[in-house]
Structures are given as C-alpha cells and as structure tokens.
Image (cartoon, rainbow, N blue to C red):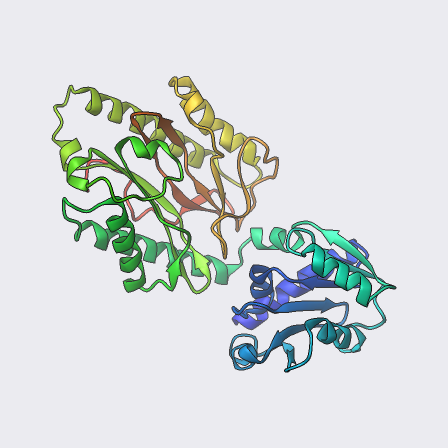
Length: 380
C-alpha cells in the first residue's frame, strides 16, 4: 500500500468524523496534522477538507515539494499579492471539494489562533465555525502499517546512535558534550533530526526529569548518568531513556551508600517498568497500567518521588495523542505505540528512569526497543 493511499484513507476517516459532527468542511492548520493527512512536510500551509474532496493551500516555496510528497492531492498555490484566505474562498466554492456552500466548518481548537478565527468569521459571515478538539489527533493514535514501520526505523536509529556514542565518550566529556555527540551520532546513523532536545543529567541533576544539559560536570567525576533521547526519521520518532552507573560508580565499594541506593532504586524502577508492560494488552484501561507501575513504586516507599505519567503516545510528535496516566480511561487498542517510562527522582541524590517504546498488538505488546538492554551493569 502506498503512502499516498494511506493518507487518502486517513482523510476518509476524518470525513466520517465530520459526518458524525454534522460538519460540511474542516480547516486543518496544525502542520503535523496537515502532514499526517497529506504526506506534505512543509509548513505555513493549510488543508481544506470538504465533503467532496480535499486541497492543500500553500505558496510558491512549496509548489514542487507538494508535487513530490503529495502527488495524489490538489493544491492551490498562493502567488505574490494573494492571501491564504483568498485561496480558502476558492476552495470552498469549488465543487471538486465541497458539494454545496458549507454552513458548519470545523476548526482545530488548539491550533487556530484568535486572529485567524476572527478573520474566518469576517471572511465567511454565513458560516458557523465549530472549534473541535483532537479529531485528527485521535486518528493519529492508532498507527497503520506504514507508520509502525517508520517508528521501528526511528527506534533503530535511536539505538544505533546511542551505541555509537558509548564507544566514543572520554572521561572529560560534559553533559553538553554527550548531548551534542549523541545527536550527531543519531544523524550519522540515518536520522533526519532529533525527536526532542536530548536530556543528559549527571548525579543529583538526574533528579530533574527534564534536566537541561550543562557544562560544569564531567563523566569521569560522576557516578550516575541519565539520558533521554530520540531520533526522528521519515517524520516519525523514537524516545528512550536509560540510567547508568559510570566507571566511577561501578567501582564504588559494593556496600557503599551510593551502590546500595542505586541498586535499590534501579530495581524498583525496572520492576515497575516490567510489570506495566506485562499487563498491557487490548481492552485494558490506560489508567490501570499506570496504576500498576505507580503501586510498585509506592509499595517500595518511593511513591512521593514519581510525579509524572507512566507514558505517552509517540508518532510524528514525541508527545503524540494518548498516554498512560491516572486520568487516562481510554482502552488500549492494537496499533497504539506508547512509551513506558517510570522514574524515581530523589532530590540531592539523583534519579533513575527506564523508558521503552511499546506497540500494542492483537494479543499483547511488542517492545520496539527490545534490542537495547535495560541492564545497568554495562559501563557507560
């Protein structure tokens, strides 16, 4: 099945949502959603989805790119002196896209600016513009075969880049050095970009779940390193976290306070990670999976030190729609890809997080990042 047909099927699914909501059209402005529904990866472009067809509204910078990336889709191209609202007027009036003058049009509540909303109401005074939340995002939650393959590839690049990093780091490397080298290695391994700003934290700074890498500490002077990283490839992402002892941490006496605490915390986090994944299968509520991991950590006495959700969806965006948290009543379905990332963060000591990317299958799950061991014994 070609990517163009996949995207046409996605637009057809959106039209079913439009029918249920009694919408005559939908204006898509979020670049991620435009890309998901068309294959076009540029920006500053809108997608008009009418009841009869769809058309991209873009400008001359992307004219050739649209032909390459969305060859099955019509495009209206803005020339000098023209406006996007003018293109939208033409699209709305074209019978190829709208069978009749639309009366109710959906707009993306989270992405449509107040300025654009006001301009739409002024330009189309007879149209009711209906703010809609997460219609396309819900479609994105269930991955098709092409998306699963793309995320597999992104995860592989994420792993390959990290493995190359481990063989290249010197004791005087700082957090910033590790970040820069890892991002370079992921690109060398075939990644198009990073999925998000890489997190690298040494020792007590690992107690900050989203620590910003600094230049003040070195690998050789540290005992613990937490790294949260991911590659983007062909518009899809991977997202992994591992926590390691350094050579200094490995050489700590087996009965030292650090060695005992690290082993205790690491084992609890890994137990929560493994228990949550073992319980994942279609039909189970997402909040129940979060609760399994949270109870494991709480029973070990660390409940006050795990404050974030267990995981989130990944896809074209690193925090894609859906997730595992105490408020997520959604049932797991085949085709969802979620992170599972329990953590314990102890101020003044450090933190441990273990994260994998997990595909929900017809009968259970597949850990897409299985190739990267969760064993902490390997030296960083």
